[in-house]
Amino acid sequence: MQINITSNIKRTRRQIKGFESQLPFAVMRTLNELGFKIQKEQQRQVSRKLDNPTPFTKRGFRVEKAKMSNLQTLIYIPPIQDEYMKYQIEGGTRNFRGKGGAAIPGKGLKVNAYGNIPGKRKGLLKRKSDFIIPGRGVFRTVGKVTKKVIAFVKKITYKNKFPFYQIGGGIVSNLGAQILKANVEKAISTAKFKG
Image (spheres, rainbow, N blue to C red):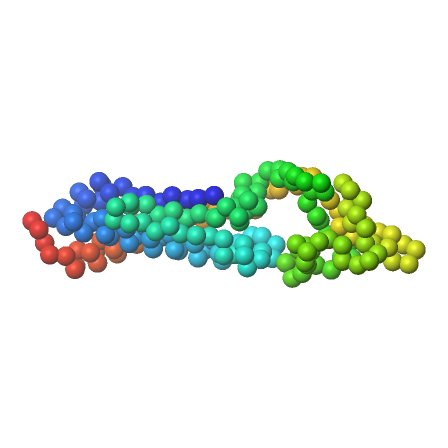
């Protein structure tokens, strides 16, 4: 997932005749400022739109800054977070490969603060009374009662919950011209006129 911010540099050049040499610097500053505003807002909104996201998910928004040689800022989600965030952004069905599929905690299973199965990387069997039925899940026997504590599913269908592109587009629409104007004015005030 990524958002690419570019600028219409030709139109802005006509508006500041005589100070053209300062324009790329002002545009670069504007693009980077917008990129970091988008990143900050996405980090803020992910907590509102998703149910208790992990710190790892919250940190999953990156900015590749514009340079004088490349006037574009890229806001993106790294591949490891994008693997699951793309379903929160676009919706769709996620298919799980492997023997069991995705492990979904059942009622009564203790989960961590984020709703995930604690210590899942070390294995799903937490007690001696736990056993796996392939393709179905993890079962636990307590006394004479056996119940499913983890279900295995081969696919999960998601609705799009996180407005990744809308957040970026909204910030650019609402603040882009204002930030560009401030950066152009700053560049002009510090430039030597070449007319």
